[in-house]
Length: 134
Image 1 (cartoon, rainbow, N blue to C red):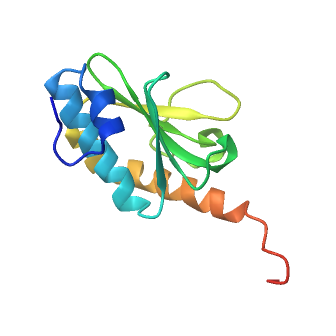
Image 2 (cartoon, rainbow, N blue to C red):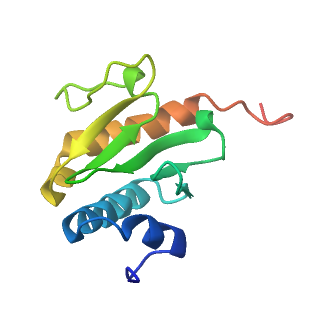
């Protein structure tokens, strides 16, 4: 089955998921790409993850989508360092956190948008200026 509006790798990754998870994953993908329009999208079919960032390295990842049976997990790179006044972020790792999205309405929470924007600002602040650009 071809999932409209996606590239082949994304469509292949979503194909085994339920229609509900497919719809939520595509909505989450659109949400991320709207907030971070210049992000590169990287699909890891082996791990079943879609990563968004500005390079192929882990340090350049802003967020990721991981598919579960009945929800989509939005992983937030460096989430442990980000403000989270509504306590949306879950996880106990030293670096990353995640939010389990169970409905498209979860994407309308302004706090989620704020976290993702904070993650982008965090990445931008860690970039070294190019030589001669100080």
